[in-house]
Image 1: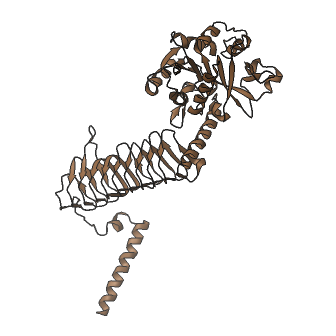
Image 2: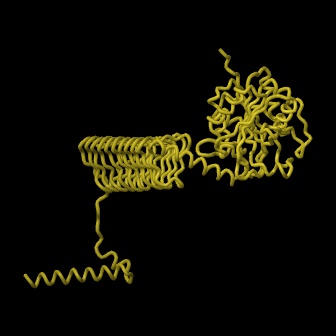
Image 3: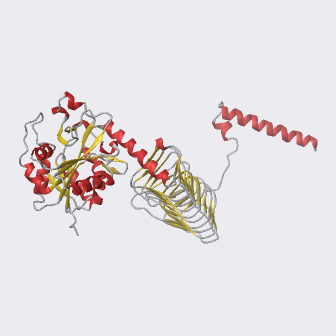
Length: 487
């Protein structure tokens, strides 16, 4: 029985990425739920490598901090001066001096790379017993990319960077994806022989292949089935192009599982989000972070959900939610904002121009329109009147409001926390509730209305309002006289 291969993954992430024109290191730019390097590490994870080494350089501390969050098992190694890919790999291997088996080298800016492709490359390499294997792809436009040069029998002869290529070699469309598998022992020996005799004055990792080939060591090429997986990112334009490609891949995958995406071109689903069967995602919708959309739910149009759970059969229309939970068959929107720790029970409703925060809204309860519900608990089957404000902040601390079950609160209420409205209680429209309301009681908390007759005619004489009031008063007087004559 053969022994399993020991594996080491090396990710090259030291470059500055000048063309990104950004204070953020290139590998930390986000793309549908992960950074560029986060996607690469995810593609490599199924290999089950004993060690993962990430070569950092430009703004190394930022990259280290990110790695501690997304890949704490990875070992960052500093390349103080960027002297080429060969130099970077040599530094990485110095961190694992006893490493044997297979070394897999990945660029940190190829976010579309699939785990299946990495696995196939490594299996082909180990199966052939090769000294080195390169992942290649046939691309429509190879400009700017290294070329695969084969001999007359189709075997790999060398890999040449475009700046060092001859005019004939630049016509080749088979390119080097910057992704490799090496035998660790033979790689260490070859790295010590690299030269800087090239246009950039750097140690090219690709020169290892020519060294192996000239020494009669077996080298191989593994061709990716989809060339888009090998696309890297050098500027914001390319980043946007990768984002579109990944969007299409993700949307197609969800549609194949039974999700309806009404307009894939305007639907952006992070790779970290989950959508269940028979859900409908309408146009101009973004599902970000750890968002989960349940079976048969409707989300959109014009909706953004971040780290939000939408249960089966619920609907969220033209709304924004962050860190919220929408229960089964509940409804949100249009034009609602669910802030963190908003929780809607089964068949609850948060309607038009409603904002919630740290609010639990019980089964069947409704906040239909024009209200703010913050730091509150609303029981089951209660109704919150329009233009209601839960006054939760006293300028220093936040306080909690509790509305019981089967309660009915009037329009234009203010609940000054801390306060509690009991089960089955009512509050009158226009009330400012500052004390607890017992179960079944009606709370009325508003000033006595007083009408000052003739005020407009006296204080606003000559205005349109005064003229309208005069006509109305004269009309009322004529009506009264006519009625008197009839008597």
